[in-house]
Length: 270
Image (cartoon, rainbow, N blue to C red; front, side, top):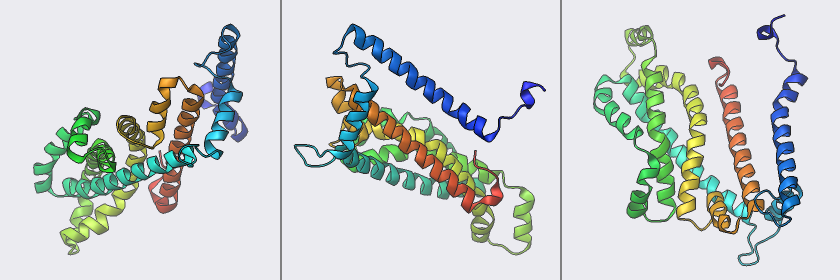
């Protein structure tokens, strides 16, 4: 049998998926041992045991100055900002995407503007956001919205424009108004696409969030990473990076589960 026709079984698929992670952990452990053999005080690659101990302390031991458990304090702050930015972006993406994709007049007036806005590097206007909105929560949420909302709008508009013309003609023949077509024909077809687009946008959203927190914040996952970098505290940075990755994975898994349960007719989430 050719390799292209060989499909791994369930157990083999799990083993193959875990293999790269195991190899990465082994490579890190070996590199850490080699560096600490030359310099026992090396901070660049702390021992896995040291990283695990620090991670447990971050999650269980209150800070001496504030009395808060830093990991959970930072997680709550970051997730709140991310949720607000993603929710606003999803609403804008769905609303404007439907209008641009369905109404030719709106498309002619708004599509070029959205296309240009989506090409602006969001991090380039971060100083402007801090000047206009201040250093509080609004500027951080605004950066996420500016970063991912235009992309969501373009994606939903494209999906709406791809609705078969025959379907729209049939709805109008049956007496459907523009509002009915918008809510009963177009909306059910683009909602699954919105979840898929939001999954893809979570990566950039995390990037914008961490960048904003690193520059101006007093709590947050990005703030903590950039705070301790000056001390070369890799035993703190690595657990935070792993934690961010795990949170992103769980959010993606949740959206994929929502897609499967809410829209089983639309096919598997990709």
